[in-house]
Length: 80
Image (cartoon, rainbow, N blue to C red; front, side, top):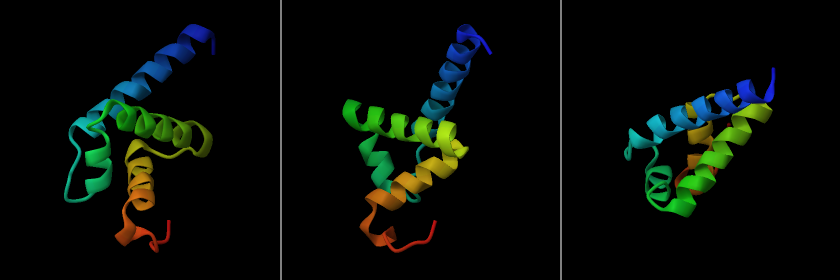
């Protein structure tokens, strides 16, 4: 895979993340939904998701739920 193909893959991943975050369900992931409303929060979530996708092989939805578990104090004891 050359650099251009990698860039296109990265851009597609970012677009997919944007769709997921745009359609954020505040009932399921209230902390992620609130965090994404700031530029810094959005960038942090986006980077977190990209890392989990690339390093661990998680889907966008799985990564969002993991981030919610980290942020939401009522979910801190949930098992991954």
